[in-house]
Figure 1 (cartoon, rainbow, N blue to C red):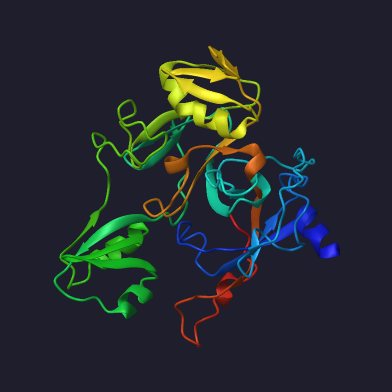
Figure 2: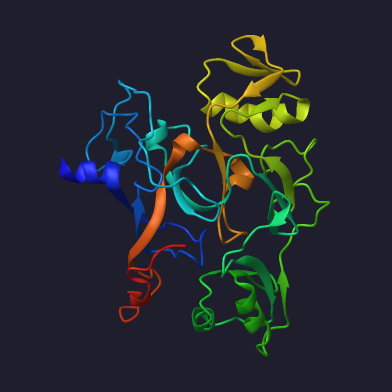
Amino acid sequence: MAATLIRWILAEPFTIPSSSMEKSLLVGDYLIVSKLHYGPRTPKTPLQLPLTHQSLFGLPTYSTAIQLPQFRLPGFSSVQRNDVVVFNYPADSAYPTDLKTNYIKRCLAIAGDTLEVRNMQVFINGKPAENPAEMENAYYVLTDQDINERVFRKLDITDYSPMPGGYRICAPAATAAELKAMGFVKDVVLEVEPPDRTDPRVYPMAPQVFAWNADNYGPIWLPKKGAVTKMTRQNVLLYAPAIRAYEGHGNVVVRDSTLLIDGKAVAEYTWKQDYYWMMGDNRHNSLDSRFWGFVPEDHIVGKAWILWLSLDPQGSILDKVRFRRFFNLID
């Protein structure tokens, strides 16, 4: 019981499963997520086995027979820009809110902000956002030789794959420049989507209206609790998915570019909660808000706080443990 209360109120362990946050967080990092920073949420799904999440040995560990209203207890801060945040993946419709799959990303924009991406640079309210110190992008390494794995490990390039004529890597700009200087490399070319190329995968998946891609995106305004949004044709495309999925209405449909709630046409909408925009530091290898949209306030789990263990899944016995990362605060 004590462990369950600590996990609910104080802190929860989390393991980094993918490379979307490199180099800030690495695959194999073990960290503590603080519930106190933003305030713990009351349980929505109370019927679940203690210290489990979704399943155990392939079997469900919860029942949805009881679903409670969810509230957030007071915290000593709110979500801030550049916070590294753990949250329930909004697009995961297979589970109740508090049991959706946990994701970790960096908060780029908060409720009320306007976000835009121009040629890979994020802008918040018209000003360039601060980039993570070792933010990664994708590069094509052009070479007619096989590159030994030791070269990638020496340069701390963990996200790489062979392709015709060379390799595709994700790395900080300085590392890409270091690799380019090596004699067996013909060139290292940054992978970037031009502004005139439309990607139908990016949110809100409406390329006929929004000619956006992951490197050139927006502008898009983040809903803020109490703010009123006019339901124009474009705004219906941008915001109806969030209103339908996260705002607690029973019947939300879009008909002929008109938003209807409980059968009534809505000309303007007043938001019930705040929303956030999350992106990975590994910008070209991150499934984030550019592809599935806003993160509602009630999906926020906590703030990534401190690293307590780091194990390299590709390391040998001698260098498996990354001691230098132990007990590092996360920023």
